[in-house]
Amino acid sequence: MFDNLSEKLEGALKSITGKGRIDELNIAETIREIRRALLDADVNYQVAREVTERIKDETVGQKVLSSVSPGQQLIKIVYDELVDLLGTNQEPIQFSQKPPTVILVAGLQGSGKTTFCSKLALHLKSQGKSPMLAAADVYRPAAVDQLETLAASIDVPVFSIRKDGNVVKDAVNVAREAVTAARKATRDVLIVDTAGRMHVDEEMMHEVEAIRDSISPDEILFVVDSMTGQDAVNTAKEFNDRLNFDGVVLTKLDGDTRGGAALSIRSVVQKPIKFASTGEKLEALSAFYPDRMAQRILGMGDVVSFVEKAQEQFDEKQAEKLRKKISTEKFDLEDFYDQLQRIKKMGPMKDLVGMIPGIGRKLNDLEVDEDAFKHIEAIIQSMTTDERSRPEIINGSRRKRIAAGSGVEVRDVNQLLKQFKDMRKMMKTMTKMLGKGRGIDPSTFLSPN
Image (cartoon, rainbow, N blue to C red; front, side):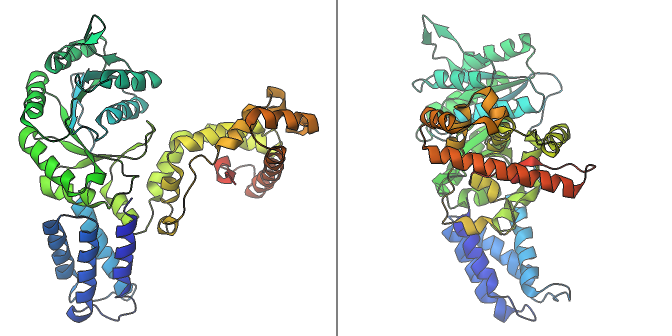
């Protein structure tokens, strides 16, 4: 995500490093490079021109503070412009005072609408909400089945209308009756998944307008595939002209995208980006923070988001319980397995590492194996409960059985047991060094290698 843009912006900003003062002469080439970087990233031409003009106006003639270099000062100016371009503040969903809050989700086919609806349901459920989904995409083959399958995995109900086993192709009625059903079931949020088309057409637009008029949604979210570049911006403009939506959802930000849609869309339609989606896992959805995204684009990392993701999976009570286990050498393979699952729920590994300042761009050419933990999980799952709690009893014959059961070699089992033994020893030492009065996050020591 934005790797190419980040690299080119870094190159552009380097040209001013070491200068004693920023002036029109030494800033001209830097501004040209910044504009070129934005255009290469598929940012709308008018947006790129306006942004670089503002950077130039803000930069030229500025007195360089004694505490910072010209390069640092320019980075700050570019950062401020990116934040302004992306929306300044995080814009949350506006919930209705009279439940249910109705959220209408629209977009083109293939943009990830149905998956996003399920992700949003899980996201809201984690915040204490009680969501319901409405299957108003009645045309795409198996769309209703897909929504029901995804919803079942997160234990969220889906409202749909079938007759004789077949989906009734009346999206407006589905949406209208879904509101009544959500109210009767005391669900405080209703998320309505609507049909998309391969391209914007009148039939689709009329239908989604009819749904809007029928249910008067509290929020209308437009889902856009960020890999479609300027087409995404053009589509967003057409939908906004017809629906006047409240916010944008960017999907597939983990793909091979140049990022231009994300940087252009808010400026063109003047509507906030509310959510960003990465990956297929239902946990891979986060609120969109313009300042954090600008930091990541400029290679500053995103420590705040990293900590928030960690806090969702690890709490103080769990950390204290594990600290006691570590200090008494009772931390076993069952605990280790549990921590692996928590780390996996934090999101794609490359995405997490990219949040660490100074590391993101260094991973551009590095393939981070998202399945790096799978062989470890398979080995632990092939153990008995007794073996997990007392790994020291795992002798030669047990190792052969575990290897056969997990589809790995005996040497892989040996390596895991040795690494776990070394890790447990190191964790105990670190706990003693930190003192009994201070907690320690065991996830710090977990590594697929």
